[in-house]
Image 1 (cartoon, rainbow over the protein chains, first blue to last red):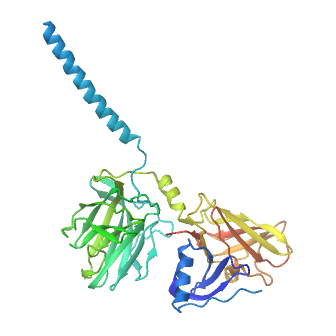
Image 2 (cartoon, each protein chain N blue to C red):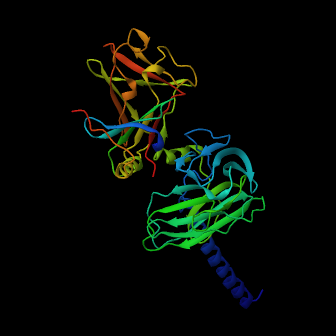
Image 3 (cartoon, chains in turn red, green):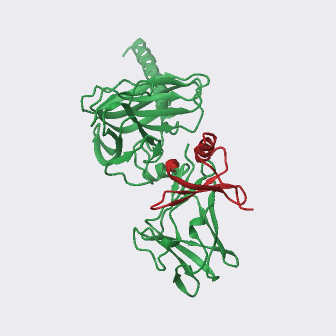
Length: 60
Length: 350
């Protein structure tokens, strides 16, 4: 996952995943599970803690 | 022949037999001991993310290229390339090369993290055949729990293949082992590195014990199955596209399940390149980053409504439950055709 090119990040409606759009010219849809064993999830949480990423709340 | 001579010969034969039996038992035990190489894809057969047959730029952030190997550079720039049909130590194999494309105080490296934590207090040996023009080309065993690094002998930098190896008795809190390879300092730090410095490796092996033994060869299918636990690239039953049945849920909502060949290490990250703009409305051609719906009794169809395929998400361990996506019009879309040029991947890497 190309963390440096995350365009948007949002929790899915049931908070099971973080849905990211990565890249602009040829975007990838990336669904990262909310699972502490998943290294992508670990990195996203670190980015949030560092102030490098904001994850939008899920639609209700 | 005298009786004494007969007895002497008999006793000698008994001794020979005992020795033979010991040797057979030891050899037989070794032969039946099972797999010995803890490195997955140590002969670089598997590369699900791409061929990387020409030099591909690596970044300062660690990224997986060949299966199970995460590459990066530090403070310079570099490339990775995978080459097949290379002759190393008299055997034909595949190699992985890292090359610095700028010079400075930096490093290029590829690392494999071993999932199993079974090395506390154990003696292990890492080995590989390496060709390099750098005297800082080496292998390093990093005990992640104890934060201890053990370097192999450094390559002479003489431009010929040399066997590099390192042995260490791990600490009682060794935890995971990370095997670093590349041009770097003995403790994985930066070194003086010149533009054009290269590190090319074959037959990477990590085994229990203090001896670097011959590389354990596994077939392509065996290696691929081991790699699937960490990364699964959609495989194709058809040369130009993958076809999956939709589960028609209600109204125009659909989902699809992708069964994984093996259980993944953890809940997988799902990545895909499908967007509405890439809906071809007809069967994708070979290599196309296109897709389309198929509607029962109607045929191939494109988008016609508010449905947005880019919203397709979902994760799993035994299978990827992908969906749901609102499909328009409200027809019974029975299949999705995904071109071979599309990205459709699941990752559970360490």
